[in-house]
Image: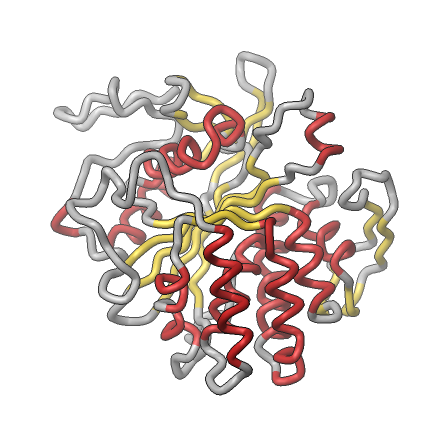
Length: 347
């Protein structure tokens, strides 16, 4: 059965747009220069350096199977004030993409923002969304590596502004709205967005409301909406009529993106775009259930069996069989786990 063409979480849009531009042979040369300038301005290295601690050596996307963590944040002034004025915002969406260099295939796993897991930056368990507030991108990457037991080679950090602007730059997208919706806009104005159930063209603010809303269904349902929205965005961006808008798309990314990918590394992923089946993704969801814990806070508790299956699938996809490490489980401190006996403490 052919996989669904694209399944990915919202803030990967800008990165995929850059890949698409890089793969558009014969288009105006200034677009390549424009994309290169944007990539260079967005470059931000990690404190750890080029290599993940889970790698034996540095990898590159043109030669190796690699992973990219997409971090979606809302660091608007309104949200900062709501969070107490702290400039380090929460991560509102996380998705890890693994790219198999031999098959030119991609696997994606969406990580619910309220997932209860160990955060190395602070040394205790909390919602994974808090890792970014505790220590920014590096802390988020360390947390994801501990949770999924795979290296995070690259990251792309994008905020709400880029998402809204990208959708508007391609003149909106067609989307099957699953229910009547009233939601706040990007400035947190209550009920500013109203949509009726059914297939329709949505603009940037409406698209954001759809992927952001948490009041109509479950966290897994929200993740599914996010993935379906990006499918719609990339389908529209890949159409012939959208090519003329690529300049605006790149402008819309601008200061809203940070990444440790160089422009040459970005364009190395072009083979995944121009392959026979186009961008072809397999989506995975971390199963679990939400509930209140002893501290009176609601968390999403990941099912250990689901986590172990996804860890294994990602490691196989990244060809890490010869670098096998003991599985870590959601909420586990690796320094206190009993790896010799195979017993796992559950927090």
